[in-house]
Structure formats: structure tokens, C-alpha cells
View 1 (tube, rainbow, N blue to C red):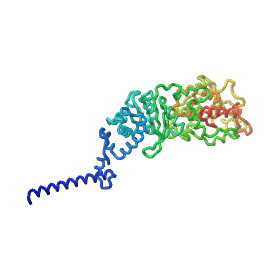
View 2 (tube, rainbow, N blue to C red; view 1 turned 180 degrees about the vertical axis):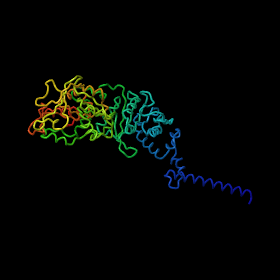
View 3 (cartoon, rainbow, N blue to C red; view 1 turned 30 degrees about the vertical axis):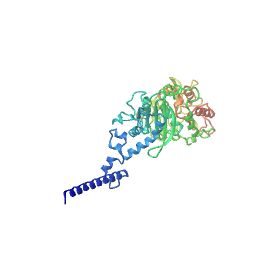
View 4 (cartoon, rainbow, N blue to C red; view 1 turned 120 degrees about the vertical axis):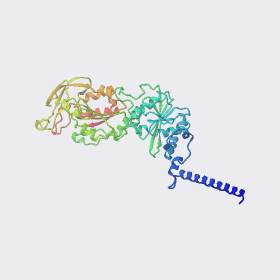
Length: 497
């Protein structure tokens, strides 16, 4: 064969080889884009990620995981959510934007692809330039320096949501220039929404809408705007101050009260049986998740097993939250057992309207045939503050002593805030007619989310058919008036026996 023929044959072979290589590469890339199939090379699929990298990704040094199909879907989903905020003018190419939570990096990438070139996430181990080092509870930004904070699901995912909310509010720019966006599976009722707003006292809710989550769930998107001129009167109360009567911002509680069990209008002939009636607990009616801390206060606690261990810790629906417990008990006979109870703080005082020393008496009360309950083996009698008039007529006082008393309303205002979830049980043997008006006058009652109140009146006695208790002068009608006034003021109170 002539040399020219051999050259033509070589060129043709090389050309055919190049065409075959190109066809093989195209076939492999199509296989990767379509999911690969069983014959696709896993290493190749991981390298190409089934698509071309965007200009934003190309500018970011990122792990291979940031280029997977799942990553792409998450970025696209977040971009669809965030695009509206660009259209509304809350975001611009020059905006300082920060994304929080476990999906913050994907959200920051979505913002960069939408043109917000400086968007960053916050991660414990920074991965510049897309993620800066820090935590959601301690953001590495000065006060009032960020235009747009996208919290995403960070509040839903954390046990420290109050800290995250506080940090987000701190860094957002004031005077209407800064915005905070929260996505949540909660805040679907007025109570939980108000609880969330109480965590953000310097921000106002601008709008709310339902959106679809990346996993197909229904979420609520809440947009807040920061204003430096929010006055103290328009901010949520943090210490219970209010005018006498109604609690401020009570609409969210009135909604809950409207679906709670109705008050018993007629005096029960057998009140000891009424204990078995169905109570609609607040956590069964609303989401209590947007709170800084959770507190149970047992006023008139007696022994640990009386209501703390015997009822609250066993039966109260806590929505998986851990409660701080305070036991208020003046009778020293019960103080010793609390030393071994973890998570319980004993307040060894009588609950009262001011700080002073009072006379405290143990009333055994009448039993059948004139026997006292103590003699019948039913345990220690109930203790109560003795008023100036002295012991009640016809009531046996097995023990009288002087005890320290404290101002319950003042202590409550120092100890908790509107950002806390507070449950109180009160069984103080008639002193409720002194304590409740004091708590209403000072606004301390507004800090109580749910109150279980035993109101003492001259009720029919189980021991002695046809006889009323000689221990109390108040009537059932006066108790009903007390319960009604509390509910009308925005306090979820239950009749407790």
C-alpha cells in the first residue's frame, strides 16, 4: 500500500476513535443525569452530580455533598421561598443576609443564586466563603448590622429557641430596614403565635402565610420587621405590669378559654366526686413550644406526693418539656422530704400578700362521731394562715406556730416573665380570697398561663351528711364569682378540688 493510503487510513481510525469517545462520555453523562441505573459508575455520578454547577457554586469551595441531587433540590426549594422577598424589596444584591439552622448552607446558596452575593450561613466549623464560623446562639455579627436573617426551621429544631430568637433580633437592622423570616410547623393558633412574638419584643409581625416544606409538610412563614421606636407600652409585657383587671394582650388566652371546660355553675352536692371530671389542659389545646423555660409552682404543696409527684409529674401533659418545680409550703413537717427531691426548689414560707411573720395553724377538721381526721389515721391536717379573728369556730386546731410569709405576687414578678410557661396550683385553705385579688392588682396573675385553683367554701361534708364545713365562711357563689372574674381577665383557671 502506498504511504498516502496508509496516512488516510490512520486519520480515519483516529477520527472514529474520537467520535466513539465522545459518544461514550455523552452516554455516561446522560446516565448520571437520569439517575445512573445499575450500570452507571458511582464515582462518575458523584463527580458530576447529575448536572452542571451553577455560577454561585463554582465560586464557592465546598464539600462534594454540596453537589448532590438532594442538595440541588433543597437549594431550588429554598430559592422558590426566598424569591418572593426579593420581589418585595426586602432583599437586594448588596444585602447582608444570614441563614441559620441546619439547612443554613443550602439557604445561603439559594440566596447567592438569586443574586444576593454576600449571603452566608453560620456553622460551628466555618467553610468560607459560604459559611462563617459561629453558632446560632452566638452570631458573629455586631448589633443592628444584618439586613435579612433567614432563620428557617432553626427555632423548631433547637431546645434553645429563646437564645436563637434573641440573637437574631439583636443583629437585625432597626428602623424597618431589617427583616427576620421564620419557618415553623407551629404558631398555628393564637396562643403559640403570641408566645413566639413574646420572644421577639423588638420586632413586629409583618405578615404570615402557609407554605409547603421540603419534606411535603405544611409550614407557616412568619416575616418580622425590626423597629427601634417600639415604645414600652406597645411591647409585650415582661414583668406582668398591667392596669387593674384585664391582662394586656389577652386575646390569645381568651381563645383557649373559649374551648376549655365550662365552669360548674351549680354547687355540687358531692364535690369530692367532681374531682373526676374531665379537665382540658392547656397543652392539649395549644402548642406551648415557643417558651424560654417551663415552670410549675405548687402553692400549698404539702408533701411531695400530694400533688407534685402524685399528679403533676405523672399526669400533666408537658409536650416533652422539662419543668422547674417550686414547692411553696409553710408547714415544717413536710420540709425534710424535699431535700432528696431533684428538680424541686422548696420555698418554706406561707404564701401571702406581703413579707411578714404570721400565725399558722393545723386544722384537723371534724370526722365522724366528732373524731378528728388525724385520730382516724388519715394523716396530717391541712395548714392555713390564722387571720386576726383567731381560730374558726368548731374547728380543732392541733398545732399553732409562727411562720415566715412572703409576698407571692412580688416573688412571681421577679422570678418569671411572659416568655416563660407558668403552671400554678393553689390550695391555701381560704387564703385565695386574699392572694388572687393581690395578684390581679399587681398584674402578677398575667404571668400564669394555667391555674389550678381550689376555692374553699362552706361546702357539704362527706363525713357528715346534711352538714356544711364550719371552716370557711365563703359561699360557692363567691367562689364561682372568683373563677369567672379570672377567666374574664384572660386567665385559664380550672376549678380544682
